[in-house]
Image (cartoon, rainbow, N blue to C red):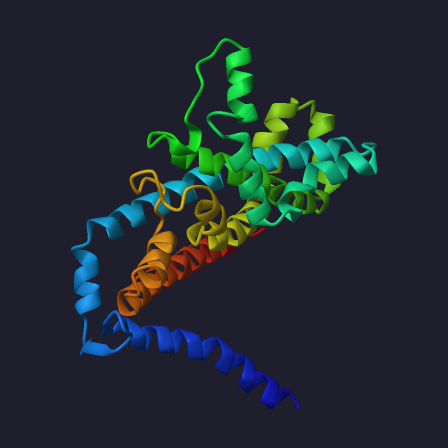
Length: 276
């Protein structure tokens, strides 16, 4: 009974990958006819400035979002860990953003950050500060997207870190308390080193999503303005479904998949190195 299920599962995973790789070596006309075969798509990719821009935006957004979420998620986890008497409704409010569909979150922030009617600019002008273009500004669009994603997924990271905190041996803290160690030294020399495997696990789980960032960007900016938020995923989607260059889009997605796989392998090796 288990062998057919295994074969079916492997086929469902392997077929799309193999088919995409096969398509990446073909050149299609606008009508969907194959007009060429070979590595032309990959040669074009190397010479494509928008491809390299997509790589840069993907990495920039990934690093910025991941750092913010790890720092804020750890802080929120420490807060929840120490505030054990916090009412259940408050804990639910803290973790509610990541349960919201990304499309809903994107639409909500699109309204909040609207340059004319949004609440964000109203707050700025109320404080005597100049309004901002937010998602329409090439200079800050990526940090704004990272901020929105951080707002949504920091609670998810916090739950992972909170589980790690609850598994730490209390005897270590009892010894530190007897020695009179200050709280900040306890955090840097005991808590943080012991939490490293948990933090790397959170990094792995978030890396898979952040490197293929799509929903939020497509809802809010669609890669604009001036391609400043055009990640490799968004670029591949537009090439494939707006310009119908299926072979080139497949090559872009294979490259993105290799990036995700490489990041996951590297982080898994890091997790194995820091396990205690």
